[in-house]
Length: 234
Image 1: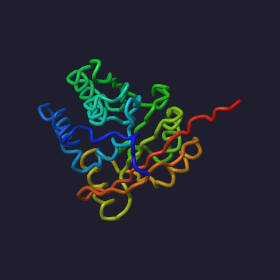
Image 2: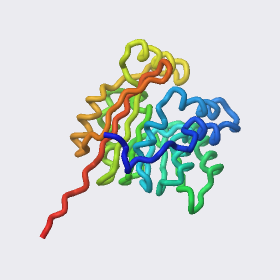
Image 3: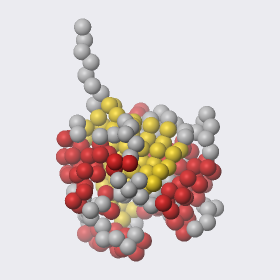
Image 4: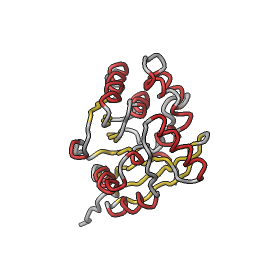
């Protein structure tokens, strides 16, 4: 299934790369500057296409706020909330929110440091995003983490999941080397079928599944939707 009329266009008229440069290109610090390069190795536009207009958005593991910032530039969202365990990343994201500003044309941006799913806002949200997060979570916590995210999807809302792919093998090795250098972590790949099973348990149906390659990085993109409750007719 394609995004269709419920999807939005690219984050900006020139795409995510131009938007990232606009948001972070003149900001100090390596982490901020790296945000301008992320669209080169991550299918950011493909992810954002699945965020409908006028939806409230919850971005889990938002990092420095790239995806919320790009959504804010589109001016189509009702409100955007991002959380991350890194105080440094959230500081950058909050500075981004101050630069983007809030007005009747741009949605409010909120960023918070959280170290537990219990600290997440309860929602529900029109879209819950989890992009390049789960491979940083210990496998023993995957079910609880994903289930907490799925529980925050509103009726008719979407769960947009993107993570590093374990195939092809050479790409998987490159992914691991990247995180060893950048995050100093040994990542844990997650089978997309596991995410599908958890989504099904939570009452969501699959909308989309695709595999993407950017340079030597491989990605799995999954989108699920919670059905609207059936209304009885008289």
